[in-house]
Image 1 (cartoon, helix red, strand yellow):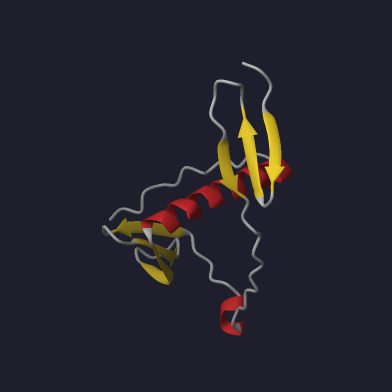
Image 2 (cartoon, one colour):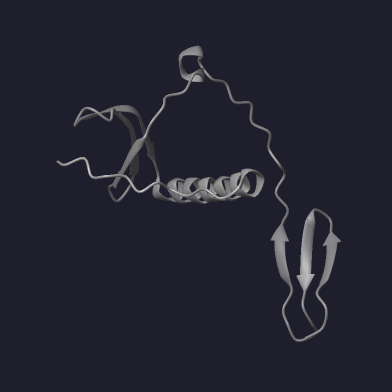
Amino acid sequence: MSDVERFQKGSHSYVKWDKKSKEVRKVDREEKKIQIEIEPREERGAYANLAMISHTKEEVIFDFAFIQPQKPSARVVSRVVMSPAHAKRFVAAAADNIKKYENTFGDIYPVKEAKIGF
C-alpha cells in the first residue's frame, strides 16, 4: 500500500490510499460557535456524590444525587434526560475529559466505599 494522498477540491477534502482503492470523500463541516448562557441559580452548580442511570427506548435518564454519610437516603439534586445518541456522545466526552484531567493532574484511583446497607 502506498502513502495516503490528501487533497482539496472546493469545500471538500478527499483521501486516496492507492490506485486500486476508491476515493473517500468527506464534507468539511463548518465549525459553529454556540453562545451558552447560564442562569445565576444554575451557575453555582450542584454537588453530587451518587449517580443513577436508567433508560427507556427513547431516553437515557441521569439522576445526580447527594447522599450524606450519616443518613440512609439520598436527594436528587439534578436530573438530565437525553436521547440515547446524545448520551453516548456525553459518555465519550466525559471519558475524554477524565483522560485529559489525568494527563494534567495524575491518575485517579476510585476509593472502594463500604455498602450503605439498604
